[in-house]
Length: 492
Image 1: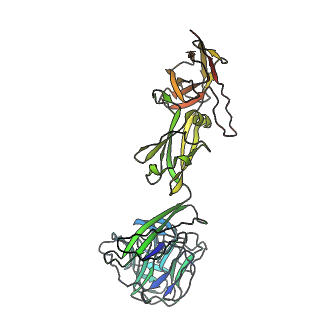
Image 2 (image 1 turned 45 degrees about the vertical axis):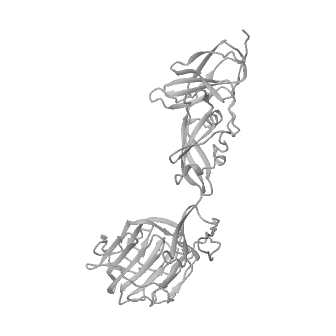
Image 3 (image 1 turned 180 degrees about the vertical axis):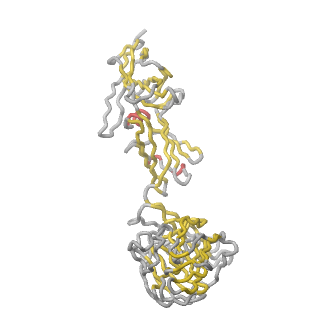
């Protein structure tokens, strides 16, 4: 058994008339049907079932042509391609006038990036010429039929075939008379890595096929690369990934397992690597939900990439630059979403004031990737005004409050916690005035807190929250000074 890693690749320049060449800087090679062990020429006629592109004349391009699958090229996936009358494809470039072929790679501005050039020359789609495309369920095919060369005519019929694995095939049905004025090759997005099969030399001929297998990516290795396994036995294969020097994005690869199994001699396993922080969906719920007793926790819902919430590592979660999941809290899972609890008073007290305050959370999917989630919350805090503590248990305490500048007309909920925000009880709900007489509980405490929550009267949406005790936040430069409510116990 042998394993082989492969992926869309990075290329090094090679201008030659060799029947095989490469690898380049990323791993692409080419070989043609005249080379022993090379591909077999087999023209694919797509005119009966294909799509005729509306291309005509010289220097025309059709952009955004659907491929029908995600095609890996230089480690990045593409689902559409741009087709030029000058015998080239690009996944990003729209340089319609790019008719001056060069040896690849070439970083000059007139050279297309993410370039696939089966026969790049100054070509023309005349009255009898056509360009067809088709996805036949297994591959994507572009056929240039009977194009002429500018300025001396001729007839050129060739095609490019892209496979979901990243493999490419160029085929040439009939060409001529000029055969020493074209470029066959590819180059990457930054135009610093490329592979040239031929540039302005006599090489290509009728009934020739050129294959570019999907190469082994430089970021992936396999250990062991070959082994002998007894019937019924198994072997663990390690595939370490090295992301040093890789730009952020998705990289596609494939593990090929070749064996002497008569039923399945080749097994292909796709591999996807994300470099950088993946995006997750984040939603902070700032509300109490009238549990009995109402807890001092705020629920944060996280929908990670890949719909695998159970792989979120709770200890890795950090919101607002350092706040961790509440100790002892238990995650809940619903479909693709994980719900995690944070200390409510600490979290809400640390959010910046504003009409749309940003909230960021970072975390890890176990053995997969790190992710970043973003949300925003209106936080226009009312100001709570009350007498200086301590209060005698059972006494009446006059409370009042004012709205933050820019707040909508609101209603207010007032809550009390005797234990530093661990549990909460209702004092007033849906209060429309700005005053309230509160009866201090008879049970004495040195760790009591009041919480005032405002909701917009028009739509009942959260506006802001103020706590009556220390915020517990260590974030700088913000400091919030809350006063602890001290209540003296009474004897009856």
